[in-house]
Image 1 (cartoon, helix red, strand yellow):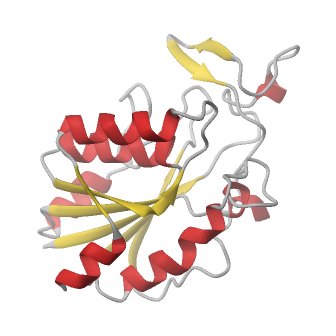
Image 2 (image 1 turned 90 degrees about the vertical axis):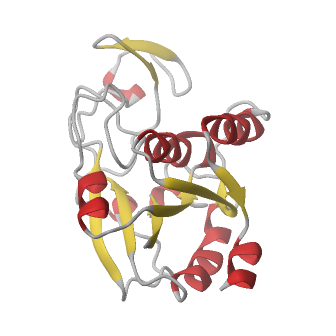
Image 3 (image 1 turned 180 degrees about the horizontal axis):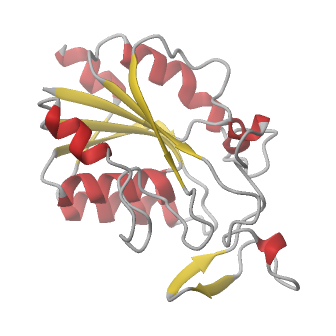
Length: 207
């Protein structure tokens, strides 16, 4: 069975949000079209405590974009975003939610960031999404959302490592691009790991 994984399409990641991804809102109608053709849909949601270690504001003298060591892992510092219970952590209001099977929250541990929908960045914690998908009989996943070079990329890489037949829906994602080449580097990395790079049009033409 195939599943659609929607990654972090939240208010803080679209234009006007605290960590806005350029054209991040443009993925919403594409994802909504895709959803009509999937019987199994799961969603990830960044859900940080206000004192999260990835926030530059929690490190005096540091600025967003700087790198630090966070409990043994290299960490990019970000603006405060997707704080638990905030409007920024809510899903984009245009995103259709009628057929979602489950939402998996991540980034809840202040001591480690969590880009992937499956594990935190140190693989110390597990959201349970992999087990949930496998128990449901899912063997093929299609990943979309925000952002290509961070949470989408790591979700794709972990899906491959868990032996799902993994597809990146490229046009249903957008990138942060701290460096302008980051999106292309991420796509090449996902492809090299074994993911199939596809588009929504290619998927819909086959269904």
